[in-house]
Image 1: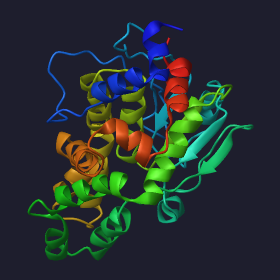
Image 2: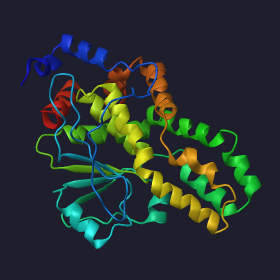
Image 3: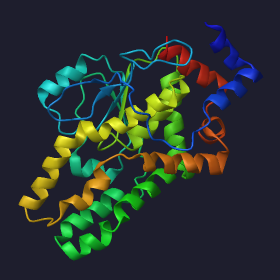
Length: 298
C-alpha cells in the first residue's frame, strides 16, 4: 500500500482527501485532455464502457475490467449477451424506475449475472417526455420543453441526486459494493447511461483519485457517444408525425456541464463539499473510501 493510501486511514489523510475532492467552480472540462475511453461495442446498446484507464493523482491508474457503465440492456441481441458474458460480470445494477423498465424491457443478461433493481428517481422526466411526445401536439410540446424548460428540468433532476434521501441511499450502496473486497466485475446503468449512471461514474472516478477534469470528460463523453443514435431517434419522431420540432428534446438527450454543476452546487450548499457529501450523505466511511482506491486503482 502506498503512503498516500495509508494516509486515508488518518485524520490528516481524511482532511487531504476532503481538500482534493472540493468541487471547483465549474464542471466544464479543460480542453486538450485525452480520455482513455474503452467502449464495449454492442448492437442493442450504445453507451457501454469500461470505467478503467484513467490516471490518478498518486500515479496509479483505474483498473480495467472491474467497473462498467451502460445504457439500458433491454434490447441486447444474442451476440450482445455473449459479448457481455465475456466480461465476467458478477452483477448488473439497474437504476431505472419501473416505468422505464416497462417501456424498454428488463435487462437481457448472461447466465450467472445477478440482476439488481435499484431505482433512482428521474424526477418524473421519463413520464413527462412520454406525455409530451404522445400528445402529438406541437403547441403542448413547446410549452413543456421549449424556452429552456427542458434544460431546466434536467438541472432539477441532478439536484435530486443530492437532495433525495432514497437517491443518496442508492448511490451510496452502489459505491460501497464497488469497494467490497472480492466483488467481481460490476455493471450499472440507467436508460441512456448518461445521468444517473454519469453521476455514479463521476463520483467513483473522483473517489479513487482521478482528477476532476478527467472525471468530467468521462461524464461529458456520453453526448458524443450517443449523438448518432439520438439523431436517429429525433428523425424517427418527426417521420412518424409525433413531433414537428424534435430538436426540443436535445437538452434531454445530452449531458451538459451545467447539469453536473447543478448537482455540485447542491453538494456545496447541503454538505459544504464532496467529502462530506460522500461520507455524511452517502454513508461511505474511510474503510469504504480506502477499499475503493485499493480495489479499483493500482
